Length: 282
Image (cartoon, rainbow, N blue to C red; front, side, top):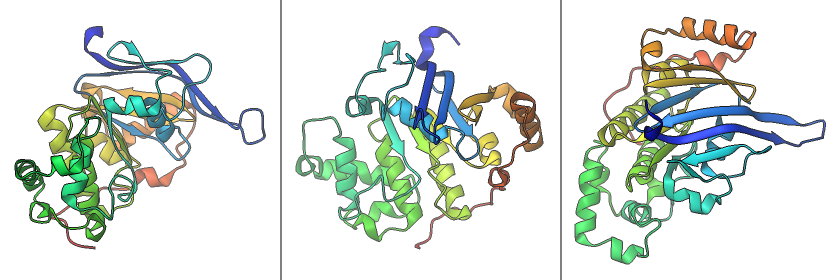
Protein backbone atom coordinates (compact mmCIF):
# COMPACT_ATOMS: atom_id res chain seq x y z
CA UNK A 1 0.00 0.00 0.00
CA UNK A 2 1.15 3.52 -0.65
CA UNK A 3 2.01 5.95 2.13
CA UNK A 4 -0.93 8.12 1.00
CA UNK A 5 -3.30 5.43 2.23
CA UNK A 6 -1.79 5.32 5.73
CA UNK A 7 -4.43 6.28 8.28
CA UNK A 8 -2.57 5.76 11.54
CA UNK A 9 1.16 5.78 12.19
CA UNK A 10 2.96 5.01 15.44
CA UNK A 11 6.68 5.62 15.34
CA UNK A 12 9.08 4.61 18.13
CA UNK A 13 6.32 4.70 20.74
CA UNK A 14 7.33 3.76 24.30
CA UNK A 15 5.47 3.73 27.59
CA UNK A 16 6.71 2.91 31.07
CA UNK A 17 4.78 2.79 34.31
CA UNK A 18 6.23 3.24 37.82
CA UNK A 19 9.55 4.30 36.30
CA UNK A 20 12.51 4.00 38.66
CA UNK A 21 10.70 1.79 41.16
CA UNK A 22 10.66 -1.93 41.82
CA UNK A 23 7.30 -2.04 40.03
CA UNK A 24 8.63 -0.50 36.80
CA UNK A 25 6.95 -1.95 33.74
CA UNK A 26 7.79 -1.36 30.09
CA UNK A 27 4.28 -1.52 28.67
CA UNK A 28 5.23 -0.47 25.14
CA UNK A 29 8.73 -0.97 23.77
CA UNK A 30 9.59 1.02 20.64
CA UNK A 31 6.33 0.28 18.83
CA UNK A 32 6.32 0.95 15.08
CA UNK A 33 2.93 0.41 13.46
CA UNK A 34 1.10 1.65 10.38
CA UNK A 35 -2.62 1.04 9.88
CA UNK A 36 -4.01 1.64 6.41
CA UNK A 37 -7.48 2.63 5.26
CA UNK A 38 -9.77 -0.38 5.58
CA UNK A 39 -7.40 -2.46 7.70
CA UNK A 40 -9.09 -4.73 10.25
CA UNK A 41 -6.22 -5.59 12.59
CA UNK A 42 -6.62 -8.20 15.31
CA UNK A 43 -4.19 -7.92 18.22
CA UNK A 44 -3.36 -10.99 20.31
CA UNK A 45 -1.13 -11.35 23.34
CA UNK A 46 -1.08 -12.59 26.91
CA UNK A 47 -1.91 -10.47 29.94
CA UNK A 48 0.62 -7.67 30.30
CA UNK A 49 1.68 -7.81 26.65
CA UNK A 50 0.72 -4.16 26.14
CA UNK A 51 -2.46 -4.56 24.11
CA UNK A 52 -4.73 -2.20 26.02
CA UNK A 53 -1.86 0.24 26.56
CA UNK A 54 -1.50 0.35 22.78
CA UNK A 55 -5.15 1.34 22.36
CA UNK A 56 -4.89 3.87 25.17
CA UNK A 57 -1.87 5.41 23.49
CA UNK A 58 -3.70 5.68 20.17
CA UNK A 59 -6.73 7.19 21.91
CA UNK A 60 -4.62 9.77 23.72
CA UNK A 61 -5.18 8.55 27.27
CA UNK A 62 -1.51 9.40 27.85
CA UNK A 63 1.37 10.56 25.65
CA UNK A 64 4.28 8.33 24.62
CA UNK A 65 7.59 8.48 26.46
CA UNK A 66 10.99 9.25 24.96
CA UNK A 67 9.88 11.25 21.94
CA UNK A 68 7.66 8.77 20.12
CA UNK A 69 5.16 10.09 17.57
CA UNK A 70 1.57 9.31 16.62
CA UNK A 71 0.04 10.60 13.38
CA UNK A 72 -3.43 10.37 11.89
CA UNK A 73 -3.63 10.92 8.14
CA UNK A 74 -0.19 12.46 8.31
CA UNK A 75 -1.09 14.94 11.04
CA UNK A 76 0.90 14.69 14.27
CA UNK A 77 -1.52 14.15 17.17
CA UNK A 78 1.08 13.04 19.73
CA UNK A 79 0.36 15.91 22.11
CA UNK A 80 -3.35 16.25 21.31
CA UNK A 81 -5.57 15.72 24.35
CA UNK A 82 -7.74 12.63 24.70
CA UNK A 83 -10.86 14.80 24.46
CA UNK A 84 -9.83 16.38 21.17
CA UNK A 85 -8.51 13.13 19.73
CA UNK A 86 -11.85 11.43 20.43
CA UNK A 87 -13.23 12.97 17.22
CA UNK A 88 -11.22 10.41 15.24
CA UNK A 89 -12.22 7.25 17.12
CA UNK A 90 -15.05 5.04 18.19
CA UNK A 91 -14.24 2.68 21.04
CA UNK A 92 -15.91 -0.31 22.64
CA UNK A 93 -14.61 -1.60 25.98
CA UNK A 94 -14.63 -5.01 27.68
CA UNK A 95 -17.47 -4.11 30.02
CA UNK A 96 -20.85 -3.51 28.30
CA UNK A 97 -21.69 -1.02 31.05
CA UNK A 98 -18.88 1.38 30.13
CA UNK A 99 -19.98 2.31 26.64
CA UNK A 100 -23.67 2.87 27.40
CA UNK A 101 -25.73 4.85 29.91
CA UNK A 102 -27.91 2.47 31.94
CA UNK A 103 -30.44 5.06 33.11
CA UNK A 104 -31.10 6.40 29.61
CA UNK A 105 -33.20 4.77 26.91
CA UNK A 106 -31.87 3.14 23.76
CA UNK A 107 -32.89 6.14 21.65
CA UNK A 108 -31.27 8.59 24.09
CA UNK A 109 -28.02 6.64 24.04
CA UNK A 110 -27.99 6.61 20.23
CA UNK A 111 -28.87 10.29 20.11
CA UNK A 112 -25.91 11.17 22.29
CA UNK A 113 -23.64 9.02 20.16
CA UNK A 114 -24.66 10.57 16.85
CA UNK A 115 -24.54 14.09 18.29
CA UNK A 116 -21.05 13.62 19.70
CA UNK A 117 -18.97 16.57 18.66
CA UNK A 118 -21.98 18.43 17.26
CA UNK A 119 -23.76 21.40 18.83
CA UNK A 120 -27.13 19.83 19.38
CA UNK A 121 -28.80 18.06 22.26
CA UNK A 122 -30.87 14.96 22.83
CA UNK A 123 -34.20 16.74 22.31
CA UNK A 124 -33.29 17.80 18.78
CA UNK A 125 -31.78 14.42 17.99
CA UNK A 126 -34.85 12.42 18.97
CA UNK A 127 -37.21 13.59 16.25
CA UNK A 128 -39.36 11.03 14.43
CA UNK A 129 -37.00 11.08 11.46
CA UNK A 130 -34.06 10.37 13.69
CA UNK A 131 -35.92 7.58 15.49
CA UNK A 132 -36.78 5.98 12.16
CA UNK A 133 -33.09 6.17 11.27
CA UNK A 134 -32.13 4.46 14.52
CA UNK A 135 -34.84 1.85 14.06
CA UNK A 136 -33.53 0.93 10.61
CA UNK A 137 -29.97 0.59 11.93
CA UNK A 138 -31.06 -1.59 14.84
CA UNK A 139 -33.09 -3.86 12.55
CA UNK A 140 -29.85 -4.98 10.92
CA UNK A 141 -28.72 -6.46 14.25
CA UNK A 142 -31.69 -8.88 14.39
CA UNK A 143 -31.87 -8.46 18.17
CA UNK A 144 -35.29 -6.84 18.47
CA UNK A 145 -33.80 -3.57 19.68
CA UNK A 146 -35.65 -1.64 16.99
CA UNK A 147 -38.83 -2.25 18.99
CA UNK A 148 -37.22 -1.17 22.27
CA UNK A 149 -36.15 2.40 21.55
CA UNK A 150 -37.74 3.66 24.75
CA UNK A 151 -36.38 0.85 26.92
CA UNK A 152 -33.84 1.73 29.61
CA UNK A 153 -30.48 0.35 28.52
CA UNK A 154 -29.83 -1.03 32.00
CA UNK A 155 -32.57 -3.63 31.44
CA UNK A 156 -30.94 -5.10 28.33
CA UNK A 157 -28.90 -8.29 28.32
CA UNK A 158 -25.10 -7.98 28.29
CA UNK A 159 -24.93 -8.99 24.65
CA UNK A 160 -27.65 -6.58 23.57
CA UNK A 161 -25.96 -3.80 25.47
CA UNK A 162 -22.58 -4.52 23.90
CA UNK A 163 -24.17 -4.65 20.45
CA UNK A 164 -25.70 -1.24 21.18
CA UNK A 165 -22.30 0.04 22.31
CA UNK A 166 -20.88 -1.15 18.99
CA UNK A 167 -23.56 0.75 17.05
CA UNK A 168 -22.94 3.84 19.18
CA UNK A 169 -19.20 3.66 18.49
CA UNK A 170 -19.68 3.43 14.73
CA UNK A 171 -22.85 5.44 14.02
CA UNK A 172 -20.89 8.63 13.28
CA UNK A 173 -18.48 6.70 11.03
CA UNK A 174 -15.22 7.58 12.82
CA UNK A 175 -11.89 7.19 11.05
CA UNK A 176 -10.85 4.38 13.37
CA UNK A 177 -12.67 1.84 15.55
CA UNK A 178 -10.90 0.56 18.68
CA UNK A 179 -12.23 -2.67 20.20
CA UNK A 180 -10.70 -3.54 23.56
CA UNK A 181 -11.59 -7.22 24.07
CA UNK A 182 -15.20 -6.18 23.63
CA UNK A 183 -16.50 -9.76 23.91
CA UNK A 184 -14.36 -10.83 26.90
CA UNK A 185 -17.16 -10.47 29.47
CA UNK A 186 -19.78 -12.25 27.34
CA UNK A 187 -20.56 -15.95 27.31
CA UNK A 188 -19.11 -17.82 24.30
CA UNK A 189 -22.40 -17.97 22.40
CA UNK A 190 -23.14 -14.26 22.82
CA UNK A 191 -19.51 -13.34 22.14
CA UNK A 192 -19.70 -15.11 18.79
CA UNK A 193 -22.85 -13.20 17.86
CA UNK A 194 -21.28 -9.84 18.76
CA UNK A 195 -18.17 -10.72 16.76
CA UNK A 196 -20.29 -11.49 13.71
CA UNK A 197 -22.09 -8.18 14.15
CA UNK A 198 -18.72 -6.48 14.44
CA UNK A 199 -17.52 -7.98 11.19
CA UNK A 200 -20.76 -7.03 9.40
CA UNK A 201 -20.64 -3.41 10.58
CA UNK A 202 -16.94 -2.97 9.88
CA UNK A 203 -17.16 -4.57 6.45
CA UNK A 204 -20.25 -2.60 5.42
CA UNK A 205 -18.55 0.78 5.83
CA UNK A 206 -14.95 -0.42 5.32
CA UNK A 207 -14.02 1.04 8.71
CA UNK A 208 -10.39 0.84 9.78
CA UNK A 209 -10.42 -1.26 12.96
CA UNK A 210 -8.05 -2.47 15.65
CA UNK A 211 -9.51 -5.32 17.72
CA UNK A 212 -7.84 -6.79 20.78
CA UNK A 213 -8.76 -10.38 21.50
CA UNK A 214 -7.62 -13.05 23.94
CA UNK A 215 -8.49 -15.86 21.57
CA UNK A 216 -6.14 -17.04 18.84
CA UNK A 217 -8.89 -18.55 16.72
CA UNK A 218 -10.78 -15.25 16.77
CA UNK A 219 -7.58 -13.43 15.84
CA UNK A 220 -7.10 -15.71 12.84
CA UNK A 221 -10.73 -15.73 11.76
CA UNK A 222 -11.54 -12.02 11.81
CA UNK A 223 -9.91 -9.13 10.01
CA UNK A 224 -7.24 -8.96 7.35
CA UNK A 225 -4.13 -8.60 9.49
CA UNK A 226 -2.89 -10.11 12.75
CA UNK A 227 -0.47 -8.64 15.28
CA UNK A 228 0.91 -10.53 18.26
CA UNK A 229 2.40 -8.62 21.18
CA UNK A 230 4.76 -9.77 23.93
CA UNK A 231 6.32 -7.70 26.70
CA UNK A 232 5.36 -4.45 25.02
CA UNK A 233 6.71 -5.38 21.60
CA UNK A 234 5.10 -6.46 18.33
CA UNK A 235 6.67 -9.87 17.76
CA UNK A 236 4.44 -11.13 14.92
CA UNK A 237 2.74 -9.10 12.17
CA UNK A 238 0.90 -11.16 9.54
CA UNK A 239 -0.72 -9.62 6.48
CA UNK A 240 -3.82 -11.04 4.82
CA UNK A 241 -2.00 -13.57 2.65
CA UNK A 242 0.25 -14.74 5.48
CA UNK A 243 -2.56 -15.25 8.00
CA UNK A 244 -4.94 -16.91 5.54
CA UNK A 245 -3.18 -20.27 5.78
CA UNK A 246 -1.93 -19.87 9.35
CA UNK A 247 -3.17 -22.21 12.09
CA UNK A 248 -3.00 -21.75 15.86
CA UNK A 249 -0.02 -24.13 15.85
CA UNK A 250 1.71 -22.01 13.21
CA UNK A 251 1.04 -18.91 15.27
CA UNK A 252 2.54 -20.50 18.37
CA UNK A 253 5.61 -21.44 16.36
CA UNK A 254 5.93 -17.90 14.99
CA UNK A 255 5.63 -16.54 18.53
CA UNK A 256 8.34 -18.86 19.84
CA UNK A 257 10.71 -18.00 16.99
CA UNK A 258 10.13 -14.24 17.36
CA UNK A 259 10.22 -14.00 21.15
CA UNK A 260 12.54 -16.86 22.04
CA UNK A 261 9.97 -18.04 24.59
CA UNK A 262 7.13 -20.51 24.87
CA UNK A 263 3.64 -19.02 25.24
CA UNK A 264 2.56 -19.58 28.83
CA UNK A 265 -0.95 -18.06 28.73
CA UNK A 266 -3.37 -20.94 28.22
CA UNK A 267 -6.34 -18.58 27.91
CA UNK A 268 -5.11 -17.62 24.45
CA UNK A 269 -5.79 -21.16 23.26
CA UNK A 270 -9.52 -21.11 24.02
CA UNK A 271 -11.63 -22.37 21.16
CA UNK A 272 -14.47 -20.40 19.69
CA UNK A 273 -17.97 -21.76 20.12
CA UNK A 274 -20.48 -21.98 17.32
CA UNK A 275 -23.20 -19.39 17.84
CA UNK A 276 -26.89 -19.10 17.18
CA UNK A 277 -28.36 -16.23 15.23
CA UNK A 278 -30.07 -14.38 18.07
CA UNK A 279 -29.24 -13.02 21.53
CA UNK A 280 -31.26 -14.09 24.53
CA UNK A 281 -32.01 -12.08 27.64
CA UNK A 282 -29.65 -12.58 30.57
